[in-house]
Amino acid sequence: GVGGRGVPHSSPPWGGAGRPLGRSAASGGYRRYAWTGADADCRLWFRMQAEARRLDVETDRNGNQWAWLGDPTAGDAVVTGSHLDSVPDGGAFDGPLGVVSAFAALDELRARGASFRRPLAIVNFGDEEGARFGLACVGSRLTSGQLTKEKAYELRDADGITLPQAMEAAGHDPETIGEDRERLDRIGAFVELHVEQGRALDLSGDAVGVASAIWPHGRWRYDFHGEANHAGTTRLVDRRDPMLTYAETVLAARREAELAGAVATFGKISVEPNGVNAIPSLVRGWLDARAADQDALDAVIAGIETAARDKAAAHGVDLAVVRESFTPVVEFRHALRDELVRLLGGKAPVLGTGAGHDAGILSASVPTAMLFVRNPTGVSHSPAEFAAEDDCVAGVLALADVLEGLACH
Ligand code: HGY
Ligand code: MN
Ligand code: MN
Image (cartoon, rainbow, N blue to C red):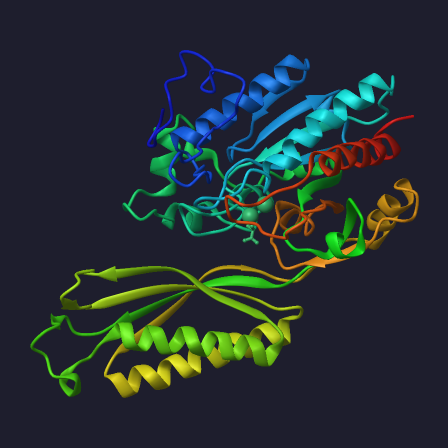
């Protein structure tokens, strides 16, 4: 394995029937971070699934995997797929459902005797969650030119390992990463199937829906610099406690989100020196904020930062705010969206989402669309994430109908 708890590839890493690639025995959640052993296991799984279906598999300069049916250079390809990496202790469906459904939809089309008039590709986009290096959708951002090689080289994980070092350690040459215009020009349409990360389909009673838009969203790192001191002997009035400012900022984030009808989350924190009996010198908090439109998001971000700076001044704490990831609003192209609705018989609901996806990134370069599969609890980014088998099958059949309509005679 590489850089993680992956198993050597002497034999398929999954051994028996199960596919617990990167699953934590403790939490039951998945820990499939970019360029780790678990990632390598997933990449091997993808390659084996593709080769078993006689697809031509390649890994592009940015580490995304493509499995081709037909001649890629013919252009106007219909591409489908998603990602296999996860957030820390993520669920089994976010990402993998789109890749597995793509392979299953191809099986279904072959069973129908479909013949393809356009090349078809199944893609596994690398590092969609940004769990290790902090930036979402690295694979698709590099390919679409939204992340430059220079900026990508600045990314580093919690252990200080840079993205190029991690790629190198995993056997991928980082020298060639960057925009892949030629590959984008081959794509006529990209359709991503994804488990819904919300309950709209559960509430509407539909197994499958079509995406309308992705909310603008981003990640900001808040660095609260205070003064390390003794927890037991330092008078309250003499403290410059960054944890206090952090706590006030978390409460401010909730208030600002409520005011704007948005969402804001501080889900990740690091504390130095992180001792029970030591007032911290530094508290780092990561904010994830999303809203239905840019104005609302701007209001939330500004409100949170203003409140944080006021509290920092009051506590004698210094604050630095760095935007680490940002995705503007995505309005999926209406023609392709409406074509999917038509191919599904005109009844599938059309719904927006606050979750980011590779389809959202690619939509700046090629026509993209998304299918959502019902998630009965709406829970995601959690080991409890679930989708019923019947709904997953409905998703596969819907994807097959869409691919047949777009790519077959
Ligand atoms: O965070 C997201 O919206 C996605 O799961 N990367
Ligand atoms: Mn996700
Ligand atoms: Mn996802």
